[in-house]
Figure 1 (cartoon, protein in one colour):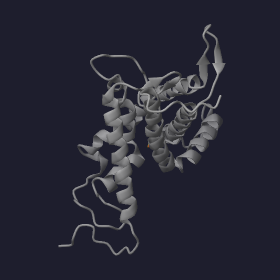
Figure 2 (cartoon, helix red, strand yellow; figure 1 turned 90 degrees about the horizontal axis):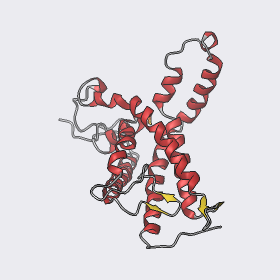
Figure 3 (cartoon, protein in one colour; figure 1 turned 90 degrees about the vertical axis):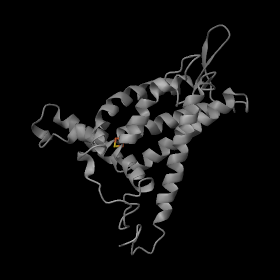
Figure 4 (cartoon, protein in one colour; figure 1 turned 60 degrees about the horizontal axis):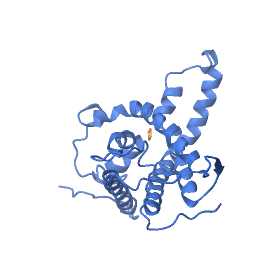
Length: 243
Ligand code: FES
């Protein structure tokens, strides 16, 4: 019997698999712990991106009510599936490397068929993108004593804005979104608003080429922005304020 992970490859193919597993599991673990912590998720103008709708509940963390949307969106993401099929399930661990088990029937059988709800998570996560933009804008606003609002910027403003931009690019480069815009079209030229649809499809297709990059960077930026908000909110550090 051929051993698991048998391959003729001579490169260090396992480095990507192993590295992906460490980062992916690390961020998931961190996010779960933080979501359950239920405190230190806002400070002044900052709101942690892990707490999309921050409200105070004495008995349960508010993240529990919202986290399932971004979490479900990521878990069902086509690129994310590749990450955990390879790095967690070793099914297969890399191209041209013998897999761990051989009963994979594609996404047409239980349980993987459930992953096809991705499109519906996309509809929900679009709402979250708007909420995050609201947090990103308010991260640049400071309230004066007489109720006036002025512009201000700290490191947290930049981290929250960066995370929001990456989340937006991650969603705009989504395979399902690309399919919604172009999957059912054969001839844009004869369709109602075909020109606009074609331009949007071309734009999303260009971003789609970098979907993996947006997946990883937006995953990390959530954790980094949250870590900063937590550190400031819990008093471990002072906000690094530029003006
Ligand atoms: S395919 Fe990755 S977010 Fe939709």
